[in-house]
Length: 331
Image (cartoon, rainbow, N blue to C red; front, side, top):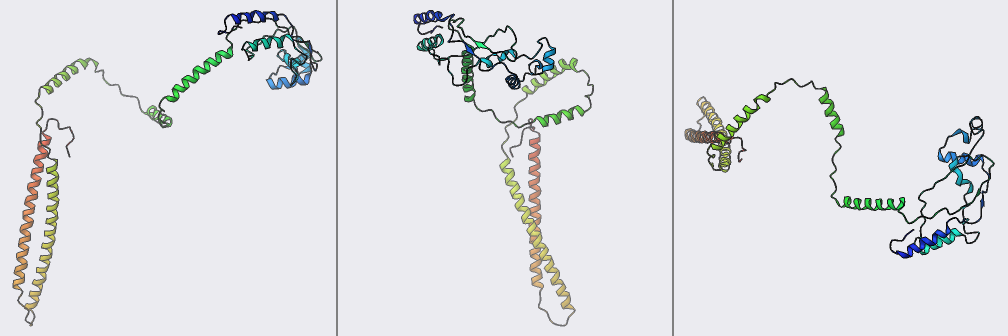
């Protein structure tokens, strides 16, 4: 183990640690219970191990083992110290001294990075294990899997911070059902007809297109016509006013004609009766004069409307003759 910031001191620490190699860690430890089937059953249930040689007496007896055996990887379960019992309860030992030396150098954490086990034989129910722990070797400082995980986690955290600072993507509607429907409709359509191959004519069409574009470019620019939208709106408003006046004049003429008819009826009735009615000839002449004036107003309004419609038709013809007639009108 080498501290990258302490140089020679770390090298001295490494040399001191080598003195612990080959020493045992405390006295031998005897398992609290012999190997037994109930603990094997609980371990198999927890681990999901269904090998029948661990619990099925008949199948285990017929196997190469000749009887029940315990799972090899259950080895530590038989010799593990009880909860609350420390390795130092028996007094100082090489392991506690080695740990104190390492912690004093600033290495305060112990990481169980890996474990290697070698099995000489299967354990059987009734075996009572004795554990002896010896320091086999002490390596130089190295990067453990945990350190790599920490570095990877830090990199992921930095990437996540960058992603969080990005603008939030818009929430698009779920169109999967619509896509499925459209795909089904497309699949139900008949196959496309066999169109002729027009690729040989492509060059000729491109030549014609170039000539057309050149001819269009040589044409003079379209004249800048004045904006007639305001005048058109003015004429439309005048036309609407004239139509209202015409309708009013027609209504007035109708009322006058009705009153004249009434007076004529009264006149005829007066002729046929003995009483002397007043002379209404003047009133009739007055109403007829009013009717004539109204008829003249109606005729004048009709002529003006005809003129307005003619001017509008002329303006539309001019606009339709515009070379770029496809552009939208200003009104």
